[in-house]
Image (tube, rainbow, N blue to C red; front, side, top):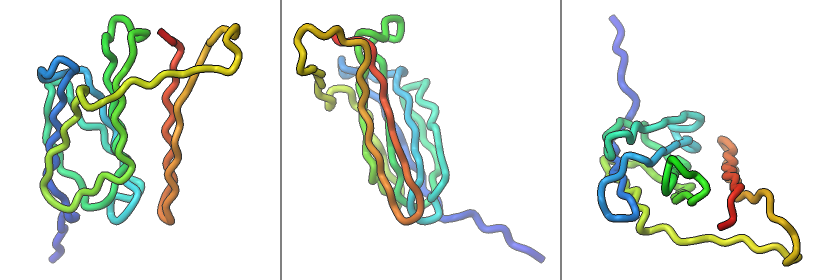
Length: 141
């Protein structure tokens, strides 16, 4: 006889909120595990209804979430939320709330230069894995 035991997992609820304070269906989230049994695992919670609950293995994750201000006009901007040390140690709720984001502006040393592209990147290295996140921007208004 054999027993197949589920790894230690917990329910994690994601709730998405737009800039207007209403539930939002525009958020996308990406979780990359980097410690414990979560190491090397990747999850994409379905936020198309504005909230979802998933079971995640115990561990630490890089949580990266974004929402376009206007999906029909991406140049209007995006809201980004990143937590490189999101820890799952029990049931929890994650609030992805656009009202908690802050504007970021880019300036170049030469005022006569024509901006064409900018980016934001961060890297996280642990003994178990490495994670790099890159966001690319082509609008500067």
